[in-house]
Length: 360
Image (cartoon, rainbow, N blue to C red; front, side, top):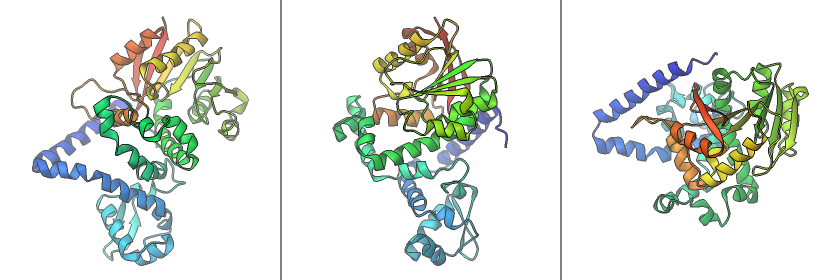
């Protein structure tokens, strides 16, 4: 299904947010607050359903709780109570005979569903993730990320030292990232560039999408883990490997030259200003005078009280790594310090925007 224009999505989001606020305003304030506070328990319920693979078990049709419990290896009554809650939230559907069926949201919990949310559900409910957030108040008090103090190492080192959780974390991030690829491709025209360098590109999902949409564009995938991430195999499977070079490049080291556009997707927001500037200046050194820098980031709206995913992710970054989401004005200031000029911010149908900058 084609994506609607970003402006249409913003209008729909505004209406939905307005209705949510109206619903809360119509209830006594303590009750509305109580509903928000209990959201953490709903995350755990979704985690349980994802872990048990309930969505996969219901693919062939509705099942009563006892038969569903047999399929997923759960206690029948307890599973029925879990499903009753999730059905009340629209994740599943409880039928008149009290059997349970998939809804569109429930189907998205299956691992192989298009744009699956299973990975992010497993991350949000993971015990390690919850332990991280239990120290959030310290980050607010001190202005410093609390995870390094809790773990005795940086977030990136911790993920490497705990590969089982690291895999859960990366799959969760991948699920979120996958929701942004099509909106970016629909909102921004990459076909005007001869060579696009995707820096810290992971496997290269976005770059593959760019190359498939723009047959004359060549790509360079640069990533610290390029050799072990499966990038070459992924690009070959996407049938764009003949137009894409895969290179290993350190995050704080030299950046491959020769690009007309340099893409950094959710890279800058991970770092405090000093490190963010180092990354940007390295990119600036690799660029020609007519090059374009394209940051794919959630841009915090300036409008007071505006609802936006960036405001929640911003707190997560504060907790884990000391990074931050920025407003358009803050990006302009950061880019100027690194030798760039902010040209425009291109909104997409998702939460992410394309921050386009030129060389000063």
